[in-house]
Length: 537
Image (cartoon, rainbow, N blue to C red):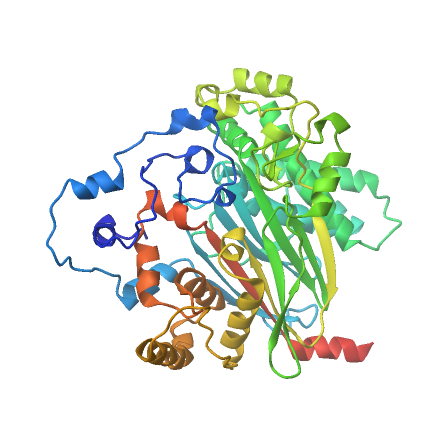
């Protein structure tokens, strides 16, 4: 629910947002081309490039706009009220409580909370959660799109099916295939847990099903049924790679239906990162492709909280990723494969679904674009070839899989896109969620970080702290509570309603300058069940 633009103008008049770029740009491809002096380049998935300039339509500067009008000498401030703030923060929240016994086993997951706060319009993040019906366990994931939302939408719909099929035993795969052949009803594979806004593409469902069926047919042919053990890590890796391969193949083959033909091309030419957790009893696997993260919240014996990272960012800050990329390409490309901390000087994540501009040969790209619809052929971005593009593919969707055996002190898991981690330290994330879930707040000395604080300001900070004890009850969703802190925290680490109101009042064309889309899933574990698993062994 976008906030009214007029709420923002008083903030400009009061010089509250003086750091904003001098030029506003109305553009559906802001993430590709619009670079503002204030906006850190690290927040853009794609580095600005001259080829993207045709998408932009510069507007007058905000300074010129404000100087062109006369205002009262004492301007009135307008902020969102607490109910309005809550309405925005809670618009996309979703909670699910897991039955302790699902008919197969006692679940180690108590439930999960999820939420999203858009910065892009439309939001490019997606989320998914489902229970595996033919095997055991739950799947939960966050997906961060770039160059549009087409790829993240497709991956959020399809990836869990590929994982579920990869986990199925040979006999079940045969049973499903026989049901399709004879026209009988299929065994349900997944039970989805979705917010009403988390839609599925009905137009592409048949295409997606046919690709999935081809995959399980190949699994049937490869597996003679002799081995019954399923390697979860191998299944996750195969599912990620196969879906990315199908996205690429569907775009190359095309479709007689013009709408579907354009859709599969949009999916392939945009991109998405993915961070997925599979929880089965005490076995937790995290498969990560890109720079979203999985963070485990651990409660120590003294009641304090510590964060355990279960994923690695696949970007220039990861030395192993840099080394991997350099080893996969000739030595003469060592200086060009990563420039300015970006793949070929353009893309921040080093692993992603889609993004065929970094995977296909130049000839294949030209052939697909020339034979594609006019919307694709007229798009400057799709026709643009990355610089120093000699030995593709430069990008992979293969995930890095981390295994963790749950312990009673492992209380929850946070899956979140990089919009959260750009604004909050992992330890703060875990502490805030831990305190929210337990209702216990470990009071630390107030740190003022070198600021000169008067007695009146210190009194205000202590009052805020006291109010914070009751503010937890404003939120019935841990992900919402975390977003409230991510957007509204001030320099002292407390939620500032005025700041929160300003950030949520930003119009669409400016919100992305201050933050990215934020998508969070908080998974709460059942410590008693986890402890019982340990005692059985």
